[in-house]
Amino acid sequence: MIRFGSGNLRVPKFQRPVYLVAGGMTDYRKKYPEKATEELICEAFKMAAEENDLKVDMAELKGMVNFCVYSQFADHFGDQLLAEARAHDALGLDPIGNIGVKTGGATGGSAVLAGAMAIASGYASCVPVIGWERMDEVGTREGNAYIASAACKNFESELGWMYGSYYALMAQRFQHENKVPREVLAKIAVKNKHYARFNPFAQAGMDIDVETVLNDGIVSDPLAFLECCLMSVGSAALILADEETAYKLTDNPIQITICAGSHTLRTADRRNMEILLLPNETEKTYANHTMDWPGFTTFLAARMAAYYAYHAAGIVDPVEELDLLETHDAFTISDVQTYGDIGLRPYGQERDFIDSGDAYFGGKLPTNLSGGLIGTMHSVGATGIMQIVEVMWQLQSKWAKYHAATEMWSRFGKTKPEDFIDLQVPNAKKGCAISHAGTGSHVTCAILEKP
Image (tube, rainbow, N blue to C red):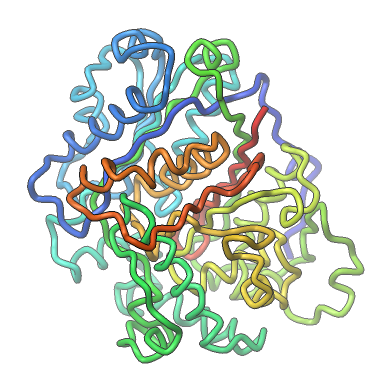
């Protein structure tokens, strides 16, 4: 059994506050042959610099930068080691120092954490964090094999070189233990695909029903194609700053607290322990809990990240205190698993977060209004950054600026839906984004709030 030492549960503390001032992204596509990776990276940064109502122009902004963080999941896709150097060169930010970050599916969130730590420590005062993935230069089968290499190649890869297979095993067990029917998982796909319809950056927005999902082709039982994340090409960018610099750049900065957790790469190596309680839980919450924890179906990494972030940001009850949430819905099953891990419902009651309507626009905690990874994208190095950008725009009351404008749709060769719905959350003050890797080996939890 895992037992924590005296320092393991120390609440992280930034030495000074960290702010988000701007974000940008490209649209996301299955294939993007007409644009080089560097072009996509520059487009995302250009949007952040020029379309976020900053008080300075591009040249002035670049003159304020003193560190950069780059986020790419796999060198394999673009066949380029040290791709962060190519990105840095293309942006014209030499000779400013930079690092590249890689933590599987959580690469984007981890990159934001690295940028935030640079500012919080005093090392830097203005840090662009830019992520991307080039997933269209290999076939889908080969791409799945590359992604599956983030699992343990000694033990797990033989399950089929595909993450769908790894999650299918957890899905079967989770459904059995928690009495979660296939229809509940299908609702998540329906919801996220629907919200993606109102996102001009999205790759695969569509209106479907539960029956369509249930009758779709199976990737790995029980997961259907429509329940799995997208393979995408695209880029996303964030600009982080300390307080003084943030207010030089914008009148509307958003404060960020971001923390991380981890767990073993191999799910079979995960030892059982007493449930780590979040601020909204007590020992009575799990007095009748009889299943092993974390077992095979929950993510200790997500719970650790949430534990640190909630305490650091002063969050007690996430459903009541947060106004919106972006989860890492790589699969419908990973989405519902996360509801328990981050305390939206006690373990064993996760399905109620969907069934109750809380997860929908207009509910207590609308989730994945971007469309998520199932509806919008999983350009892996950009994913965690995209999530945080979407939450930031919501808190700045700028969702419509980037999603409702007809010009934004036409920029990407799309037509704005005639039945377009404005998904701006009214009076949003606090939000959360979860960035998740592998079968839960790395997770970041970011809490964003208006200062």
